[in-house]
Amino acid sequence: MPPETPSETRNLEPLRRKALEMPASPGVYLMKDLFGEVIYVGKAKLLPRRVVSYFQKRPVSPRLRLMVSRIHDFDFMVTATEKESLILENSLIKKHHPKFNIILRDDKTYPSLRLTAEEYPRLEVVRRPGRDGSVIFGPFPSATALRDTVQAARRLFPLRQCRRPDVKNISRPCLNHQMGRCQAPCRPEASPEEYRRLTEEVRLFFRGRGGEIVHRLTLEMKAAAEAYDFESAARLRDRLANIRTTLERQVVDQVDDRDVDVFGFQRRDGLLAGALLMIRRGRVTGCLPLEAAGGGVKLNMEEDRPAPVAGEDEEEEGFEEELSLLTQYYGGGGRAPDEILWPEDLAEETAGPLADWLTGLKGGPVKIKTPRRGDQTKLLDMARGNARAILEDRLNRLCRNQDAAAELRARLALEKTPRRLECFDLAHLQGQNAVAGLVVLEDGEWRKDQYRRFRLRSARGGDDYGGLREVVARRFKHKDWPEPDLLLIDGGRGQLAAALAAFEALGRRPPPLAAIAKVRSEGDRDRVFRPGRKNPADLKAGSAGLLLLARLRDEAHRHVNAFHRRLQEKTFLASPLLDVPGLGPAKKKKLLVHFGSLEKLAQAEEAEIQAAAGLRPAALAALRQALTGGLGQQ
Image 1 (cartoon, rainbow, N blue to C red):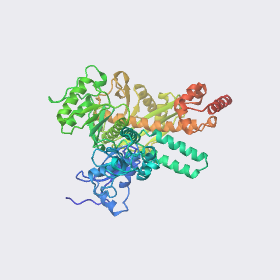
Image 2 (cartoon, rainbow, N blue to C red):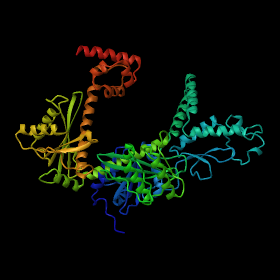
Image 3 (cartoon, rainbow, N blue to C red):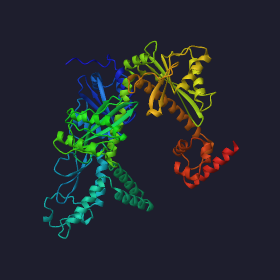
């Protein structure tokens, strides 16, 4: 085995850049060594901020320095909440046994709740559930909250607590029955059917239908407060919070032991990325990235694979590439699960042969379904979120692809391969707060320190041509700023002509120019225009060069829209007309998004305002009075 490179002398910049490009969401990251072995699993509330901290300065701890010295790559999975990332981290540590994980690496795990597989079941908290036919709920992150909830549940659902195997041979009921905490199935007159109904209620409660216990505890808490028994009310408040914490179902842990594969896809600019979420024995154990090139790839299955027939169904045709990824994965050796969750309904002539083929591969039945509600829809959302992150990562890698720049030079007839690319975009809302943004891509890296934002001065909002002339003139008056090898404009031939007019007014030669626009009559396909050419450039859909320009355009759009939203919120929220009782920042934002201006808000009907922000009658009346008086004085 080659010696490890000390972290002090290694160049960690590529890992740092990769960390900064991660989605700003909760999730789990897996650090890998030179041979691809997982050496550390961690969780994060914000993935970029946590992971980049490993690569920015010399770690203080010798153990951490040693770990960083062995990191050569990392993977990640996004989750919906921080709590889900915590539970997923636990599952992945149990799977990979990474050498640098200490706290969660042993056999300890989060507690679960077991409803025993007996004639008269009991509730008990366990660390190792086992597989004896008992019903398992959890695991739950908080053991304290779980135990408190179990005590409350026993008062509502008085199941037996004794461990005696032969219930009917007990001579008399225990003290729990006298206290109302046990139904006492040991009594001769006790009904087995009544106990079974009680057991079913417990199942429903711990599967998320706990409205009854929450309602009862809320009433008890209010009664204690009204009786000035604040100590009891505080205890009930804390218990109610623990119950709600415990019953918060986590999508990364399911209550059954099935093997399920969940597919999620994301498509942009002709590029398709997918994520395969693997659930084994009821727990998420990994996420496999699936990538496919765009541009009309069709299913090309071997004879022993199903041949989905889409016919003239446009929706089915739109999933041909996705189905191709599925068949390539399982046909290439991927183990078929008990169930597959697919993001869209498949036609019967496609789903039937596909299920039969998968059943033959597995040697047992395989179901394909598209859930519409419940926890399984959350799994689909999680898979889509990971597919989105995979697509973003692929697009970022594409920006660093030298072949894309070389293609742009050939297809756009540039004098040299573009190293520095800049892009302008404009934004306004009904003529208000007209702004422009400039983004820079240099040697495949986003130069965010050189991004610029402009508030338009002379051009009115809505005048895109005038806005472009102004912002181009203002940017190229700075002679100390680096010259771009390609300046991209978001728009068509008209925007391109406006940029050329700005350079003519400046009395200088323009840099290489191009404009990118979507042609809606051709399925929102991107077209790139160059000065002096009637026809668009010969850049095929899904090509590296066109995807690079689309990525540049999307980044400019994101940058300018973020600036514009901040200005709109500042303008709207700072208005003295909206300083009325009952109208806080959240409702002001809702009104901003819906109406866009004070004038539109003043002209709106009361029903529309209510639908947008849900104001109380007093707040609505105060708002109407403030708007009418304030606008009348302007």
